[in-house]
Length: 357
Image (cartoon, rainbow, N blue to C red; front, side, top):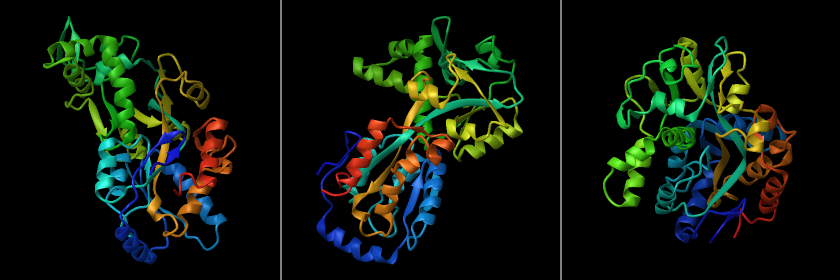
């Protein structure tokens, strides 16, 4: 079976009949939707869940946990039944390896709901001077190895000013998303990798890699994403509130945030321009701002009709009253999907194309 959402085919063969029957019986013991995953999607899901609970008498408000996209998808793929979650929130697309884990554990019908967009921003303490950075600046500051005099060397840079003399003479300390977060993958792809290319690091990594061209490219791409381990680059495994707390205790640090989190903390943070573009709903919608990503959540089709409120929650989430340009998610900081894309998603769900065979 194939399910299509936003013109993207997602899933797969039906679950075994025996497993489905067993789940249908067991799930009767749970009457509340359970969700986990992305810390970026968390505040949006909380807004929807709160209003959903108020608007639906007799349906309990969903339980939502954070933990990161990777953690949420891992839990999502553990199997079917009342002991597993119904929805995984994600700030990145589910990977093929994760889909394989899902299938192995009987989660064979998955619905992807892409509900809008977000930007990744780089911010410092609100009292700081203005920052304008390029991907190459961030790569040179944070990569494990960087080009110097035509060769790759262990990162020698100690201050931001050494990387770019227009930046302050602060010790390099950046708080970046941990590897279980979807934001990390986008940061690696659109910042570190782009900076690696711009500085010539990618070519140098290819030159020292072994194997055929494909193997060299794979090795070089991976090497470009390795960050230094000397304390200059600090992984944050918690959510953005932890990153903000780190900046509060170290006002000369740099933090990575989602646009919506920044826009709700402008009294504490000053955002950097990236390649001369300031992040905003407008610059992300137009494509001017270079670091943005879709936001989505994944739903177990087998749980729909069995877990009370799951179908209703999905339909409510994708309504214009929630994800439209005048809705509360846009007010919080979501970059809404274009009208045609949003309408196509709503029509697909209303017609049962994503929820039934």
